[in-house]
Amino acid sequence: MVVENNVALQPYNSFGIVARAQRLVRVRDEADLIGLMASADWNALTREAPPFVLGGGSNLVLTGDIKPLVLKVEIRGRRLLEETARGWLVEAGAGENWHDTVGWTLEQGWPGLENLALIPGCVGASPVQNIGAYGVELQDRFHELDAIDLQTGQSFTLDAAQCGFGYRDSVFKHAPAGGKGMGLAGRALITRVRFWLPRPWKPVLGYADLERRMAETGMANPDARQIFDWICAIRRAKLPDPAVIGNAGSFFKNPTVSVEQCADIIARDPKVVHYPMADGSIKLAAGWLIDACGWKGRGVGNAGVYEKQALVLVNRGGATGGEVMTLAKAIQTSVYERFGILLEPEPVVV
Ligand code: EPU
Image 1 (cartoon, protein in one colour):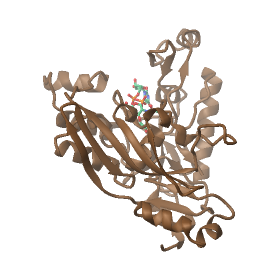
Image 2: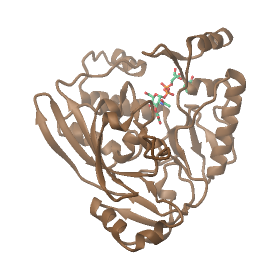
Image 3: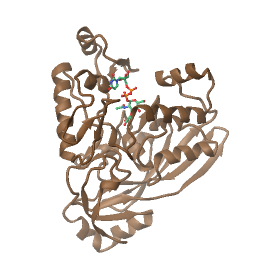
Image 4: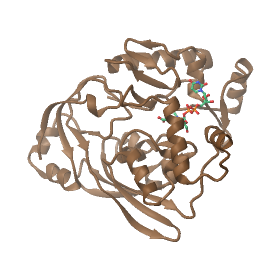
């Protein structure tokens, strides 16, 4: 296995932030990693700090060079494992591009992932974040994943319950709590993910943006390919393409508040965008809160707030991770001062 030194990470993070990995290993299959972990080099490579797992880098803010060993996941391969009257079981390597994988399933005639089109990043990151868009979350289509324990070198499999999915959350985002907690952050390297796409396929059309497309085109029964095309068009219209303008998608989670808290905010700001949740709480649109504080188009240094969607922070060219985080903190402060809500960032900050 080749250990590369002083590797530029700008191409490997969707924000396009300039930083370097002191040492980087590309993991192209499970045996690569298991072999490395069993070798004498492993102790030397990880003596000072546990390794850092890099997937598609689409949910990452780099605030400096990475000193721990970077394991860059490049495990490829996609296949159908099972087809029954009840659905399709599909597997993809963690290093496969997410959007290409969604497109591939549709081309094969296996619908179900279309609402998650054009989300940047790799398959391996999809359960970490429990990615979601337009009424579908990964957990709705997830079956199992395989991972390698970075402490023991053992392979293991987790089902949906064991992944502890929540809104943009999973066990992979939580630190192991002294052996008692369920957290696997920094502990597991996801190698493969299996999706269950149920039959008969049912479209998920409840979102206003999709309903608008249906009304405009007069198509009352769009197929999965049509929904995929609509989602791509909707996202392209309001979200910046990371290949053109560096960004990490939504920078903050949409916060939830109690009915009372929401009523307070409505009394002061009747236009606040809010959605009732199944558990009785209310979800607020963080983009609206940030927009209401006048942030759209503003920035700190070369980091800015995207003009068409205030929830997205962008790299206007040459932004540092420090500038992105200073901007994020300034936004948190002004939203807190006006609404009493502390916005929680989505990306991992390193
Ligand atoms: N809004 C504003 N001003 C803004 C931005 C939004 O007023 O600058 C308002 C919109 O008009 C709308 C509401 O806020 O009424 C919600 O906006 P939008 O429909 O764009 O969705 P979102 O809540 O901002 C979430 C996800 C997106 C996902 C979309 C569609 C989070 C943090 N973000 O965004 O996910 O694509 O819904 O389902 O949950 C991501 O996580 O990276 C991401 C892009």
